[in-house]
Length: 218
Length: 214
Image (cartoon, rainbow over all chains, first blue to last red; front, side, top):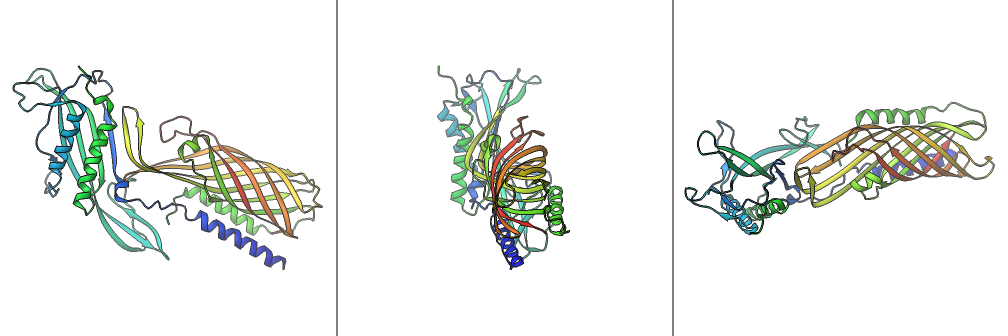
């Protein structure tokens, strides 16, 4: 009877521990947009934030592709990117310069995108054990699948927006200096409208979290 | 579900648990082994409360203690507490910049402690209150996931954990066990946010059973 009671007690507590503790990576039910991220950084040596009031921006988005590789990046969102950046700059109070031969802009805005495909494997040992990927994912390393059951692929897109100033006289002394960078990354979903909406939201966020860019009132 | 753990600390913990179930040598009536298995509820405090404020219901503790005739005991204690929180669409200001995104924050803490304490009763009643002090090491993994990026911070910490508890006899060799403990892992290394104060503190309420005479 004593052994039975002791065994039952141990079984009860181990069951409770197993049910609560072994589910140790909470599944928060994240959606595609939960994997979006915006990182902004500014040059700490710049002291004239607020004095920049005019900008020039090319009417194209650069695609960052490794040398020798084909550019497979879609241009479906180029117009959305250009329009969104310009509208946010204008909303902050910047004036866009189109003819730089007449007026020298205070800053230059450039934008470029890249994308990366990833393959993830998931293995099973009585269920969903875990999944691993290679390439640049968190750990940045490759982990072989353990009893792989299936795989899926996903594409991550990254948009880089740079604000630069031109210093020195035109010619050999001219230097372009990046004073602000925004990196926007997220999963490319199957919905074009969703991707476009998220691009607009994230571009706006990059300016929202950079209030020092706002020109000082005249 | 996926279990992320410090492999070396779990190996040590497994050896402690193995010792609990293999050390069944006989002892005198006044001396005996006390083996406790408990479910642990964690309440963050201090830095941990700032990072993952939610109460943790994922954890366990295990004690192996040798009771002396004078009602004092000594032994080892181990366990695991898992803290996690979700911050949706949060902006974190860093030096000369900011990071925006949904953050999944987790802390895995594994204590490996030596313990000593005493019971306040004479052993004749069915209820046995006690107090103990635990000293040893904590293996702590602090992790944040923003977007598709995961950043880990692993450190070993020296720590202390005072505790009070109560054992209530259910039958001759089994008792219900309730335990309150404050875990304090002292600062070691650097926190994820770059702070030099990388200490952790949390209260834990542990409920389980104590078995004697294994």
